[in-house]
Image (cartoon, rainbow, N blue to C red; front, top):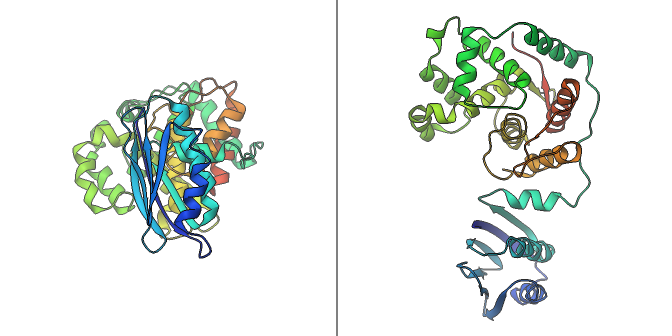
Length: 316
């Protein structure tokens, strides 16, 4: 197992590197490592695997760095998370992140679930009616093309079919020949999802990224955010909007459509994965393995999206 942890923080005025050293000392019996302190350095050397030395280098009581763990025992890795949790109260702020999204999920798993399952509203029942119509009416050639391009293999295609139908309306695709990757990437750029520097990459690797682009465009055009307006019309600096969009993007593709990026990208997605495990058998990456009935799938989906602040309004 391998994972890189990123950390940045500022000690409280009443605390010092010595306090951090003391708090970490309590964890040395739980992890296979030894601990040293020198001036403003706290150094942890791991004794098994090929892990790098973890160094907290305090500059004016601030730390900012990253460290790669290459251990043999996953349990040791989570005990290191416990160590970070232990020292967190010593800091005014201490932000932890990792390249696998494991920190977010680990922190929230011991807390009560924030998402509540609720029945479908009258407007959401219309969504259910559309799905039931789709079960009777087969997909047309345009839908088949977009679904194939999305490269998604969900256990239940009910949600994907609605997403694809809305996407076709948004892009005004009237025939198979109207499917234009460049126009799709241009729209994604206008929505300012990835920044100008990545647009060329999106065009180059369109087939690989399309399933994420599909969901991004759908969220932007088919949802209202916290009664503030349609997502595509809102500025990116609205508090919570960016993290909510990211959580919805990864949550929909991972939990419902069986396409995975690893661990949770932020705490909101971690909450969604926790919610999934509360009601369903899930895979190692949080994906729902079996859905008992269509109505429950939609209750589950809309409860998650409402938690994030999104309300489905459809596409005109």
